[in-house]
Picture 1 (cartoon, rainbow, N blue to C red):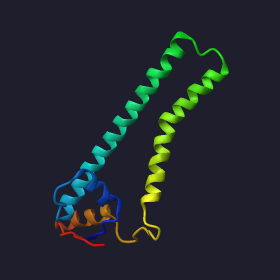
Picture 2 (picture 1 turned 45 degrees about the vertical axis):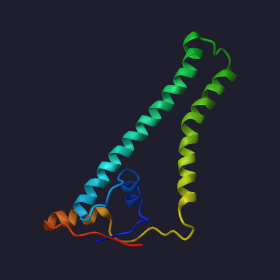
Picture 3 (picture 1 turned 180 degrees about the vertical axis):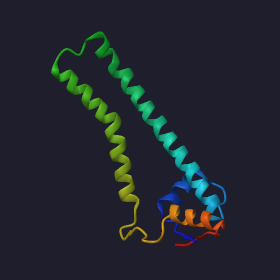
Picture 4 (picture 1 turned 90 degrees about the horizontal axis):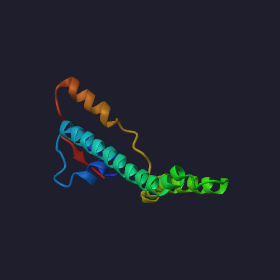
Length: 131
């Protein structure tokens, strides 16, 4: 099986796994799932930190009752958007700008379909990393 270094799953594995890349499809698939799990865990932790920081800033206004007029509640909404919206928008813009201009997603078989096929045949093919 051939895997392109431009694929999103290859880049995710490279982000978390700094050693030698797996040589078989089975080990690559499980490494990818582990990296996906840790990526989601890290994203959840980061969003929790942002939510906690926003709560620490906003909770005194709400609990003490200092936010008495409409403008203060609008300010609270803007702070929530800045805490959650800006990081998401930043990740999307970074992803779009980091892709090559002539980028076309591959039309080849998916990683999951190849892994299921290999599992059914009880054979793990060797992976070639191609450009």
